[in-house]
Length: 435
Image 1 (cartoon, rainbow, N blue to C red):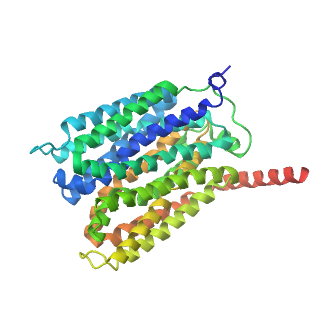
Image 2: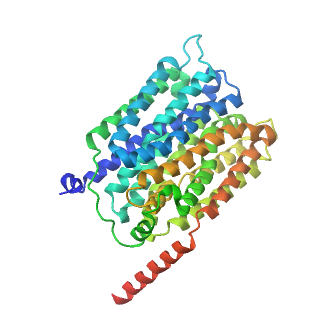
Image 3: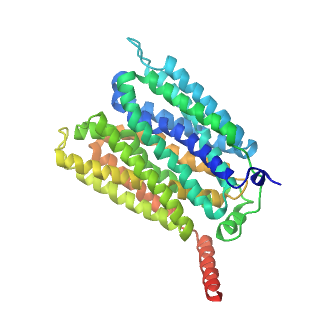
Protein backbone atom coordinates (compact mmCIF):
# COMPACT_ATOMS: atom_id res chain seq x y z
CA UNK A 1 0.00 0.00 0.00
CA UNK A 2 1.42 3.43 -0.98
CA UNK A 3 1.94 6.27 1.41
CA UNK A 4 -1.08 8.07 0.07
CA UNK A 5 -3.26 5.20 1.22
CA UNK A 6 -1.26 4.79 4.47
CA UNK A 7 -1.90 8.40 5.47
CA UNK A 8 -5.42 8.53 4.05
CA UNK A 9 -6.96 10.83 1.49
CA UNK A 10 -7.39 13.61 4.04
CA UNK A 11 -3.63 13.83 4.49
CA UNK A 12 -3.34 15.72 1.20
CA UNK A 13 -4.91 18.73 2.92
CA UNK A 14 -2.16 18.68 5.54
CA UNK A 15 0.38 18.62 2.71
CA UNK A 16 -1.41 21.58 1.15
CA UNK A 17 -1.33 23.30 4.55
CA UNK A 18 2.46 22.87 4.65
CA UNK A 19 2.73 24.41 1.18
CA UNK A 20 0.54 27.33 2.21
CA UNK A 21 2.50 27.93 5.42
CA UNK A 22 5.88 27.74 3.67
CA UNK A 23 4.87 30.13 0.91
CA UNK A 24 3.10 32.52 3.28
CA UNK A 25 6.09 32.76 5.63
CA UNK A 26 8.45 33.66 2.78
CA UNK A 27 5.86 35.87 1.06
CA UNK A 28 5.52 37.91 4.25
CA UNK A 29 9.14 38.92 3.68
CA UNK A 30 8.77 39.18 -0.08
CA UNK A 31 5.76 41.51 0.11
CA UNK A 32 6.32 43.04 3.52
CA UNK A 33 9.90 44.27 3.19
CA UNK A 34 9.19 46.36 0.05
CA UNK A 35 6.11 47.75 1.81
CA UNK A 36 8.45 49.22 4.42
CA UNK A 37 10.21 51.18 1.64
CA UNK A 38 9.49 54.61 3.13
CA UNK A 39 10.87 53.62 6.56
CA UNK A 40 13.64 51.56 4.95
CA UNK A 41 14.77 54.55 2.90
CA UNK A 42 14.91 56.75 6.02
CA UNK A 43 16.40 54.28 8.54
CA UNK A 44 19.13 53.00 6.22
CA UNK A 45 19.68 56.49 4.68
CA UNK A 46 19.19 55.30 1.11
CA UNK A 47 18.57 57.28 -2.04
CA UNK A 48 15.76 56.21 -4.37
CA UNK A 49 18.21 54.53 -6.75
CA UNK A 50 19.90 52.67 -3.89
CA UNK A 51 16.49 51.63 -2.58
CA UNK A 52 15.59 50.06 -5.92
CA UNK A 53 18.90 48.19 -6.15
CA UNK A 54 18.65 46.91 -2.57
CA UNK A 55 15.08 45.67 -3.01
CA UNK A 56 16.08 44.08 -6.30
CA UNK A 57 18.63 41.90 -4.50
CA UNK A 58 15.85 39.84 -2.95
CA UNK A 59 14.53 39.00 -6.40
CA UNK A 60 18.03 38.37 -7.78
CA UNK A 61 18.69 35.81 -5.06
CA UNK A 62 15.54 33.92 -6.02
CA UNK A 63 16.40 34.10 -9.74
CA UNK A 64 19.83 32.59 -9.11
CA UNK A 65 18.59 29.80 -6.84
CA UNK A 66 15.19 28.75 -8.20
CA UNK A 67 16.39 26.38 -10.93
CA UNK A 68 19.04 24.65 -8.76
CA UNK A 69 16.44 24.20 -6.01
CA UNK A 70 13.96 22.80 -8.56
CA UNK A 71 16.45 20.31 -9.99
CA UNK A 72 17.39 19.31 -6.45
CA UNK A 73 13.72 18.84 -5.56
CA UNK A 74 13.19 16.38 -8.43
CA UNK A 75 16.28 14.48 -7.23
CA UNK A 76 16.00 14.73 -3.41
CA UNK A 77 12.25 15.08 -2.93
CA UNK A 78 10.23 17.98 -1.60
CA UNK A 79 10.54 17.18 2.12
CA UNK A 80 14.33 17.43 2.34
CA UNK A 81 14.52 20.54 0.17
CA UNK A 82 11.76 22.36 2.01
CA UNK A 83 13.20 21.61 5.46
CA UNK A 84 16.69 22.67 4.35
CA UNK A 85 15.48 25.87 2.71
CA UNK A 86 13.18 27.01 5.52
CA UNK A 87 15.82 26.39 8.19
CA UNK A 88 18.48 28.29 6.24
CA UNK A 89 16.06 31.16 5.56
CA UNK A 90 15.26 31.48 9.27
CA UNK A 91 18.99 31.60 10.07
CA UNK A 92 19.57 34.36 7.49
CA UNK A 93 16.73 36.44 8.93
CA UNK A 94 18.01 35.93 12.48
CA UNK A 95 21.46 37.10 11.36
CA UNK A 96 19.92 40.19 9.75
CA UNK A 97 18.07 40.98 12.98
CA UNK A 98 21.35 40.87 14.92
CA UNK A 99 23.82 42.41 12.48
CA UNK A 100 21.85 43.93 9.60
CA UNK A 101 19.37 46.24 11.36
CA UNK A 102 19.96 49.87 12.41
CA UNK A 103 20.59 50.20 16.14
CA UNK A 104 21.12 53.48 17.98
CA UNK A 105 23.76 55.42 15.99
CA UNK A 106 24.87 52.40 13.94
CA UNK A 107 23.43 52.24 10.44
CA UNK A 108 24.47 49.21 8.36
CA UNK A 109 25.93 50.01 4.97
CA UNK A 110 23.68 49.56 1.93
CA UNK A 111 25.97 46.72 0.84
CA UNK A 112 25.24 44.87 4.09
CA UNK A 113 21.50 45.17 3.62
CA UNK A 114 21.81 44.15 -0.04
CA UNK A 115 23.88 41.08 0.89
CA UNK A 116 21.33 40.05 3.51
CA UNK A 117 18.42 40.35 1.10
CA UNK A 118 20.37 38.48 -1.57
CA UNK A 119 20.98 35.60 0.88
CA UNK A 120 17.31 35.70 1.88
CA UNK A 121 16.32 35.24 -1.76
CA UNK A 122 18.90 32.49 -2.35
CA UNK A 123 17.54 30.31 0.46
CA UNK A 124 13.90 31.41 0.39
CA UNK A 125 13.61 30.38 -3.26
CA UNK A 126 13.54 26.77 -2.09
CA UNK A 127 9.90 26.96 -0.97
CA UNK A 128 8.37 27.52 -4.38
CA UNK A 129 9.19 24.45 -6.44
CA UNK A 130 9.33 22.03 -3.52
CA UNK A 131 5.92 22.92 -2.10
CA UNK A 132 4.37 22.95 -5.58
CA UNK A 133 5.74 19.51 -6.36
CA UNK A 134 4.25 18.17 -3.12
CA UNK A 135 0.81 19.55 -3.98
CA UNK A 136 0.89 18.18 -7.53
CA UNK A 137 1.88 14.75 -6.17
CA UNK A 138 -0.92 14.50 -3.60
CA UNK A 139 -3.88 15.90 -5.57
CA UNK A 140 -5.69 14.34 -8.53
CA UNK A 141 -5.73 16.03 -11.92
CA UNK A 142 -9.26 17.43 -11.50
CA UNK A 143 -8.31 19.02 -8.15
CA UNK A 144 -4.90 20.47 -8.98
CA UNK A 145 -6.04 23.83 -10.27
CA UNK A 146 -7.85 24.56 -7.01
CA UNK A 147 -5.07 23.09 -4.84
CA UNK A 148 -2.29 24.96 -6.62
CA UNK A 149 -4.33 28.16 -6.54
CA UNK A 150 -4.81 27.80 -2.79
CA UNK A 151 -1.06 27.27 -2.44
CA UNK A 152 -0.37 30.29 -4.65
CA UNK A 153 -2.91 32.29 -2.64
CA UNK A 154 -0.47 32.05 0.24
CA UNK A 155 1.82 34.44 -1.65
CA UNK A 156 -0.57 37.44 -1.73
CA UNK A 157 -2.07 36.46 1.63
CA UNK A 158 1.32 36.29 3.31
CA UNK A 159 2.45 39.36 1.41
CA UNK A 160 -0.72 41.18 2.46
CA UNK A 161 -0.14 40.41 6.13
CA UNK A 162 3.45 41.50 5.74
CA UNK A 163 2.41 44.74 4.02
CA UNK A 164 -0.15 45.41 6.75
CA UNK A 165 2.07 44.64 9.74
CA UNK A 166 5.72 45.21 8.84
CA UNK A 167 5.65 48.95 8.01
CA UNK A 168 4.17 49.79 11.41
CA UNK A 169 6.51 47.31 13.10
CA UNK A 170 9.51 48.89 11.36
CA UNK A 171 8.39 52.40 12.30
CA UNK A 172 7.78 51.63 15.98
CA UNK A 173 10.10 48.72 16.84
CA UNK A 174 12.79 48.84 14.17
CA UNK A 175 14.03 46.39 11.58
CA UNK A 176 15.49 43.98 14.13
CA UNK A 177 11.89 43.20 15.12
CA UNK A 178 10.86 42.91 11.44
CA UNK A 179 13.55 40.34 10.67
CA UNK A 180 12.98 38.51 13.95
CA UNK A 181 9.25 38.06 13.32
CA UNK A 182 9.92 36.80 9.79
CA UNK A 183 12.48 34.30 11.13
CA UNK A 184 9.93 32.96 13.62
CA UNK A 185 7.39 32.40 10.83
CA UNK A 186 9.93 30.32 8.89
CA UNK A 187 10.66 28.22 11.99
CA UNK A 188 6.94 27.46 12.43
CA UNK A 189 6.64 26.47 8.76
CA UNK A 190 9.68 24.18 9.04
CA UNK A 191 8.09 22.46 12.06
CA UNK A 192 4.88 21.83 10.08
CA UNK A 193 6.89 20.44 7.16
CA UNK A 194 8.76 18.10 9.50
CA UNK A 195 5.51 16.84 11.04
CA UNK A 196 3.29 16.46 7.97
CA UNK A 197 5.17 16.44 4.70
CA UNK A 198 5.59 12.98 3.22
CA UNK A 199 5.99 11.88 -0.36
CA UNK A 200 3.29 9.57 -1.76
CA UNK A 201 4.00 6.53 -3.87
CA UNK A 202 3.81 7.44 -7.57
CA UNK A 203 0.49 6.63 -9.19
CA UNK A 204 -0.54 6.64 -12.84
CA UNK A 205 -2.14 9.93 -13.86
CA UNK A 206 -5.81 9.94 -14.65
CA UNK A 207 -6.85 9.95 -18.27
CA UNK A 208 -8.09 12.96 -20.15
CA UNK A 209 -6.53 16.06 -21.59
CA UNK A 210 -4.08 16.82 -18.80
CA UNK A 211 -2.72 13.29 -18.79
CA UNK A 212 -2.48 13.27 -22.58
CA UNK A 213 -0.51 16.47 -22.75
CA UNK A 214 1.84 15.56 -19.91
CA UNK A 215 2.38 12.06 -21.37
CA UNK A 216 3.33 13.63 -24.69
CA UNK A 217 5.93 15.90 -23.08
CA UNK A 218 7.13 13.62 -20.28
CA UNK A 219 10.12 12.32 -22.25
CA UNK A 220 11.28 15.87 -22.96
CA UNK A 221 13.07 17.83 -20.25
CA UNK A 222 11.23 21.06 -19.43
CA UNK A 223 14.49 22.85 -20.23
CA UNK A 224 14.13 21.67 -23.86
CA UNK A 225 10.37 22.10 -24.20
CA UNK A 226 9.16 25.05 -26.31
CA UNK A 227 5.61 25.05 -24.79
CA UNK A 228 7.10 25.18 -21.28
CA UNK A 229 9.40 28.06 -22.24
CA UNK A 230 6.50 30.01 -23.79
CA UNK A 231 4.58 29.65 -20.53
CA UNK A 232 7.65 30.73 -18.54
CA UNK A 233 8.06 33.83 -20.72
CA UNK A 234 4.39 34.73 -20.26
CA UNK A 235 4.66 34.29 -16.49
CA UNK A 236 7.74 36.52 -16.32
CA UNK A 237 6.19 39.27 -18.45
CA UNK A 238 2.91 39.33 -16.52
CA UNK A 239 4.80 39.47 -13.21
CA UNK A 240 6.34 42.83 -14.16
CA UNK A 241 3.23 44.94 -13.35
CA UNK A 242 2.61 42.92 -10.20
CA UNK A 243 6.13 43.56 -8.93
CA UNK A 244 5.91 47.23 -9.87
CA UNK A 245 2.94 47.54 -7.50
CA UNK A 246 4.49 45.49 -4.70
CA UNK A 247 7.86 47.25 -4.77
CA UNK A 248 6.99 50.89 -5.48
CA UNK A 249 3.28 51.38 -4.74
CA UNK A 250 4.18 52.66 -1.26
CA UNK A 251 6.50 55.30 -2.76
CA UNK A 252 3.89 56.22 -5.41
CA UNK A 253 1.09 56.64 -2.86
CA UNK A 254 3.32 58.58 -0.48
CA UNK A 255 4.88 60.92 -3.05
CA UNK A 256 1.88 61.44 -5.35
CA UNK A 257 -1.05 61.07 -2.95
CA UNK A 258 0.61 62.08 0.33
CA UNK A 259 -0.67 58.83 1.85
CA UNK A 260 0.46 57.93 5.35
CA UNK A 261 1.71 54.56 6.59
CA UNK A 262 -1.79 53.33 7.49
CA UNK A 263 -3.24 54.25 4.08
CA UNK A 264 -0.32 52.67 2.22
CA UNK A 265 -0.59 49.45 4.25
CA UNK A 266 -4.36 49.28 3.75
CA UNK A 267 -4.01 49.77 -0.01
CA UNK A 268 -1.38 47.06 -0.37
CA UNK A 269 -3.41 44.77 1.87
CA UNK A 270 -6.40 45.32 -0.44
CA UNK A 271 -4.26 44.34 -3.42
CA UNK A 272 -3.01 41.18 -1.74
CA UNK A 273 -6.39 40.24 -0.26
CA UNK A 274 -8.18 40.69 -3.58
CA UNK A 275 -5.52 38.66 -5.35
CA UNK A 276 -5.82 35.87 -2.78
CA UNK A 277 -9.57 35.59 -3.31
CA UNK A 278 -9.22 35.66 -7.09
CA UNK A 279 -6.56 32.96 -7.11
CA UNK A 280 -8.80 30.50 -5.27
CA UNK A 281 -11.83 31.35 -7.40
CA UNK A 282 -9.90 31.09 -10.67
CA UNK A 283 -8.40 27.72 -9.75
CA UNK A 284 -11.81 26.20 -9.06
CA UNK A 285 -13.41 27.86 -12.08
CA UNK A 286 -10.76 26.68 -14.55
CA UNK A 287 -10.79 23.15 -13.07
CA UNK A 288 -14.47 22.93 -13.94
CA UNK A 289 -14.23 24.52 -17.39
CA UNK A 290 -10.80 23.37 -18.57
CA UNK A 291 -10.02 26.85 -19.89
CA UNK A 292 -6.73 27.77 -18.23
CA UNK A 293 -5.19 29.33 -21.35
CA UNK A 294 -8.26 31.47 -22.04
CA UNK A 295 -8.25 32.71 -18.45
CA UNK A 296 -4.55 33.58 -18.61
CA UNK A 297 -4.99 35.57 -21.82
CA UNK A 298 -7.96 37.43 -20.37
CA UNK A 299 -5.92 38.28 -17.24
CA UNK A 300 -3.10 39.66 -19.38
CA UNK A 301 -5.47 41.81 -21.45
CA UNK A 302 -7.28 43.20 -18.38
CA UNK A 303 -3.98 43.98 -16.65
CA UNK A 304 -2.68 45.83 -19.71
CA UNK A 305 -5.86 47.92 -19.89
CA UNK A 306 -5.87 48.86 -16.19
CA UNK A 307 -2.22 49.89 -16.11
CA UNK A 308 -2.62 51.88 -19.31
CA UNK A 309 -5.46 53.74 -17.59
CA UNK A 310 -3.30 54.28 -14.49
CA UNK A 311 -0.50 55.69 -16.65
CA UNK A 312 -2.90 58.02 -18.42
CA UNK A 313 -4.48 59.28 -15.20
CA UNK A 314 -1.15 59.80 -13.41
CA UNK A 315 0.01 61.92 -16.36
CA UNK A 316 -2.50 64.58 -15.31
CA UNK A 317 -0.98 64.96 -11.83
CA UNK A 318 1.24 68.09 -11.98
CA UNK A 319 4.73 66.92 -11.02
CA UNK A 320 6.13 67.39 -8.37
CA UNK A 321 2.91 68.55 -6.68
CA UNK A 322 0.71 65.90 -4.99
CA UNK A 323 -2.66 64.90 -6.37
CA UNK A 324 -5.87 66.28 -4.96
CA UNK A 325 -8.01 64.10 -2.67
CA UNK A 326 -10.42 62.82 -5.34
CA UNK A 327 -7.64 62.17 -7.86
CA UNK A 328 -5.55 60.38 -5.24
CA UNK A 329 -8.47 58.09 -4.40
CA UNK A 330 -9.04 57.35 -8.09
CA UNK A 331 -5.34 56.56 -8.56
CA UNK A 332 -5.41 54.25 -5.54
CA UNK A 333 -8.51 52.48 -6.89
CA UNK A 334 -6.84 51.89 -10.26
CA UNK A 335 -3.69 50.73 -8.49
CA UNK A 336 -5.65 48.20 -6.43
CA UNK A 337 -7.60 46.93 -9.45
CA UNK A 338 -4.49 46.62 -11.58
CA UNK A 339 -2.56 44.96 -8.77
CA UNK A 340 -5.30 42.35 -8.28
CA UNK A 341 -5.54 41.62 -12.02
CA UNK A 342 -1.75 41.31 -12.23
CA UNK A 343 -1.68 38.81 -9.32
CA UNK A 344 -4.84 36.72 -9.77
CA UNK A 345 -3.58 34.22 -12.35
CA UNK A 346 -0.60 32.54 -10.64
CA UNK A 347 -2.25 29.31 -9.50
CA UNK A 348 -3.75 28.67 -12.92
CA UNK A 349 -0.46 29.43 -14.72
CA UNK A 350 1.65 27.19 -12.50
CA UNK A 351 -0.88 24.35 -12.71
CA UNK A 352 -0.71 24.57 -16.50
CA UNK A 353 3.08 24.70 -16.38
CA UNK A 354 3.32 21.62 -14.14
CA UNK A 355 0.87 19.76 -16.37
CA UNK A 356 2.95 20.56 -19.44
CA UNK A 357 6.09 19.24 -17.74
CA UNK A 358 4.59 15.90 -16.71
CA UNK A 359 5.12 13.63 -13.73
CA UNK A 360 8.66 13.56 -12.37
CA UNK A 361 9.57 16.94 -13.88
CA UNK A 362 7.32 19.20 -11.82
CA UNK A 363 10.05 20.62 -9.58
CA UNK A 364 12.16 21.70 -12.56
CA UNK A 365 9.23 23.23 -14.45
CA UNK A 366 7.93 25.14 -11.45
CA UNK A 367 11.46 26.38 -10.77
CA UNK A 368 11.65 27.64 -14.36
CA UNK A 369 8.37 29.50 -13.91
CA UNK A 370 9.48 30.96 -10.61
CA UNK A 371 12.80 31.99 -12.15
CA UNK A 372 10.85 33.97 -14.75
CA UNK A 373 8.65 35.45 -12.05
CA UNK A 374 11.49 36.51 -9.82
CA UNK A 375 13.59 37.72 -12.71
CA UNK A 376 10.81 40.30 -12.89
CA UNK A 377 11.20 40.88 -9.15
CA UNK A 378 14.85 41.70 -9.76
CA UNK A 379 14.47 43.76 -12.94
CA UNK A 380 11.42 45.84 -12.01
CA UNK A 381 12.72 47.49 -8.81
CA UNK A 382 16.03 48.22 -10.54
CA UNK A 383 14.40 49.71 -13.66
CA UNK A 384 11.69 51.79 -11.99
CA UNK A 385 14.04 54.53 -10.68
CA UNK A 386 15.35 55.00 -14.24
CA UNK A 387 11.81 55.23 -15.61
CA UNK A 388 10.92 57.71 -12.85
CA UNK A 389 13.87 59.89 -13.76
CA UNK A 390 12.95 59.68 -17.45
CA UNK A 391 9.22 60.46 -17.42
CA UNK A 392 7.94 60.04 -13.84
CA UNK A 393 5.07 57.69 -12.95
CA UNK A 394 3.35 57.59 -16.37
CA UNK A 395 6.48 55.89 -17.72
CA UNK A 396 6.44 53.32 -14.88
CA UNK A 397 2.79 52.34 -15.29
CA UNK A 398 3.00 52.52 -19.10
CA UNK A 399 5.90 50.06 -19.07
CA UNK A 400 3.87 47.78 -16.78
CA UNK A 401 0.98 47.86 -19.27
CA UNK A 402 3.37 47.01 -22.12
CA UNK A 403 4.72 43.98 -20.26
CA UNK A 404 1.19 42.68 -19.66
CA UNK A 405 0.38 43.15 -23.34
CA UNK A 406 3.49 41.13 -24.29
CA UNK A 407 2.33 38.27 -22.04
CA UNK A 408 -0.93 37.89 -23.98
CA UNK A 409 0.47 36.01 -27.04
CA UNK A 410 2.77 33.88 -24.85
CA UNK A 411 -0.28 32.18 -23.28
CA UNK A 412 -1.76 31.14 -26.64
CA UNK A 413 -2.08 27.42 -27.31
CA UNK A 414 0.25 25.85 -29.83
CA UNK A 415 -1.44 24.15 -32.84
CA UNK A 416 -0.89 20.72 -31.26
CA UNK A 417 -2.51 21.83 -28.01
CA UNK A 418 -5.44 23.32 -29.92
CA UNK A 419 -6.02 19.92 -31.53
CA UNK A 420 -5.94 18.28 -28.08
CA UNK A 421 -8.57 20.69 -26.79
CA UNK A 422 -10.73 20.11 -29.86
CA UNK A 423 -10.47 16.35 -29.40
CA UNK A 424 -11.47 16.67 -25.76
CA UNK A 425 -14.49 18.76 -26.69
CA UNK A 426 -15.55 16.19 -29.27
CA UNK A 427 -15.22 13.35 -26.74
CA UNK A 428 -17.29 15.25 -24.19
CA UNK A 429 -19.97 15.93 -26.81
CA UNK A 430 -20.15 12.25 -27.80
CA UNK A 431 -20.43 11.28 -24.11
CA UNK A 432 -23.35 13.67 -23.55
CA UNK A 433 -25.12 12.36 -26.67
CA UNK A 434 -24.59 8.75 -25.63
CA UNK A 435 -25.98 9.44 -22.17
